[in-house]
Image (cartoon, rainbow, N blue to C red):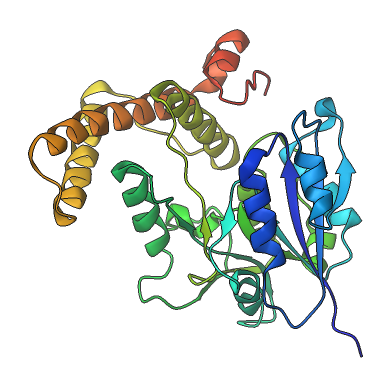
Length: 318
């Protein structure tokens, strides 16, 4: 009996040179089952469609106005033939040739595992702020370095924020689970909502620390503010999570985060004038993030034109 295929699915808009790197890494995966590659392109004006087809991908055209993060991923699932669909973004590069096999291993941890995700590794050129955040965040899912399974009712009072975390920049979904609980057709935080909905349905999710992708962003301060605004707006809409908004506590958070960044750099041998420069960068970085978080969690109080200008994705409406 032939092995069931697995699908790798990627929404794309002007993927640039990085897309070729991502697709090459996907095609190099070592698997004992057929691999299908799907790309949903929402109006790229660069060579993204040609690059995808060169790698043997089936390309689905999505009108720019019809794109949504949740709805487009549902479309990819509908077109997929795989029993499992592994989602990436156009700039998340599988770290090695066993990335997909390790994601699939996560479903073998328990029969009720519906979702499996892996970590992001920072790019070599990533700032200390970004590298430290990624390393510490994903280490918190598996302190002992072994795959972990989470299950239980979402929204429980004692839950760490990681409990409902899932990422479709590096995550895989079982078809049987998606058929019962699809993505919501929302414009942001669709992966967090999917995890919440599936946990609420009684399914489990797993984290595999070996299923890594290289994926990080060093935004300008303005972009970082906007990204944080979008993230916290999504968290508040999904979970009612509220970010600190008072000036003094915000300043203390920025101070603590910048101090941790400097400790991170010192452990890597950075000192002297460079450390001073990095301290200034760290303060600006964390101040922009804190301001974006404070306003994003209170986005419903802002006029629509302000919400749109503060959003990296120019999202104004609710």
